[in-house]
Each structure stands twice: as structure tokens, then as C-alpha cells.
Length: 334
Image (cartoon, rainbow, N blue to C red; front, side):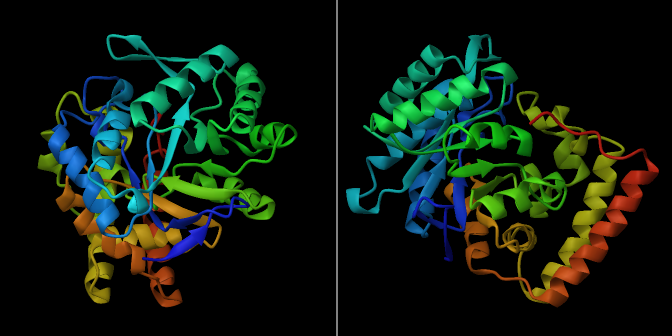
């Protein structure tokens, strides 16, 4: 497993972090379908056994279930081996699976206290503003994180899904340790401004969905996509729907050929592609069972050659042309 330093924090993170969005289950707006608690706990424990030293979660994932699963897993991990914990605030359950937005001071403090309780810890290693919404409240939310840090409730503070202009607004108040954008071969918007800016400012980048919510694992077929649970938010993601899904599945076939030449898995290729950027500290890889993380952990040691990167660039250009022919990408909200 490779390790990289997270911005100016001094934290050494494994280049694969365990993502726990999916283990929150399907009983909320952005769920991934039903989740067995025992499988979730085993996945977390196995990830740590395999060398992953940090876990990313959020209070909103399953309305706290993800954080609870993590706390349960920690009971099976020796204290000296326990991973760093990163969670987020700003998304507030409103009942019936619906999600509200709030970055007011009292709300952020209440979220932090609730996360500390669910995670069964007295300090969160990395606390992040989940989204810059409401936009007029981001300074208040960020100042609250600064105060929580000074109180010892959290060690480091960062953000997720923020633009460069928003990062600059928050930097004027307190340095940002990390930024968490979506970044994969099928979601490359971060390359335009976010990644260069974070590199210049020494803001750590921990990127989510490097496997495109599973599309870039090589495990999806049209039949599997059609059979996704109605509780799985991917059924509403344009990348999993026609006409984009046909282009994406053909793209994965091309990736499979590259993977075979390298003796890798398609997941290895996808994750290594994200990690090819030196600005990226870690790629957040989700797992709903120990078998899933066992299938992707090898990416933590993979490094693409310049020749392989060139081959992938050509395949990406072909996908871009196909998307342009149907009017471009319709982006998903999450």
C-alpha cells in the first residue's frame, strides 16, 4: 500500500481510503439499496487488515447508520490499529428519507456531537463541510469547524464538493486541510480548476467515486443495471441510463482490454488513473462486503506507466466524442 501526506496536516493516508456511503443502506434519498450490518462491519474490519488506514463517512449516510457500523467495527480492531476517521456535516435528515441543508452554527455543533456519539470517539480526525449549501451559510459553517478544532472536538477540517471561489472564501478565514471532489475517468470536471488550485495551495485531495459508482469495476452489464433495487439512487443517475449507459459500458469494454494487457483488474486501472495525479492524496473506494474490498485493494500498489496513460487518454477521447454526439453529459446531483 502506498501512502501520501494530506496537505499540510502531516497525516499519512493510505492511497485507498474506505468509503462508507453505500453501507448506509437504502432507507434514505441517496441510498444504495438494502445493506446487511454484519457484512458492512466485516468490510470495514477487512479493509483495515489489508492496510487501509482511514475511513470516510458522513452523518447523512443512512441517517447515521454508516457511522454506527464504523463504531461497531472498531470494537473488533485493536486500538493501535484503528484507522483515522473522517466524517461530514451540513446534510440534515428531514424524515421519510428526505435530506435538508443547514450550515448554521447550532446545527453544525449538534451534528458534530451526534457524530462523536455514534462513532464512539472523543475526537474526529477530519471533519468536513459536505456541500457548500446553503451558499450564504458556508462562512458560518466553516467558522464553526474552526471553533470545534480549537475545542479539540476535531483534529483537522476540510470540505467536500466546493468550487475554487468557495475555497478562496473559506481560506480567508482558516487554512483548508482537504477538499473532497468526485473524480474518475467518467467525472473529470475537477481537472479544470479544483485539482490545480489544491495543488498550488497544498490542500489535500481525497477523491470520491473513482470507480464511477461501480461502473468502472467491469462488473456491470445492461441486465445488472436494469435489476438495481428501487432503493438504489443509481437508478436515477443519468450515467446509468440510456443513452449514456450504452456509451459507458462500451468504454468499460475498452478498459477491460487495457487491464488484461497489464494483468490488472478494471478497478485497478480506474483507481490507478485517479491516483496518477500527484495532487491526489487518496481515492475513496466503497465496499459493502469484505469480498469487495479484497477485489480492489490491489490498486493501492498500482502505478500506471506513461504508455498506459496515453492509451487511456485515447480511449477517453473516443468516449468524449460519443457523448458530444448525443448532446454531452447530463450530470447527476451526487
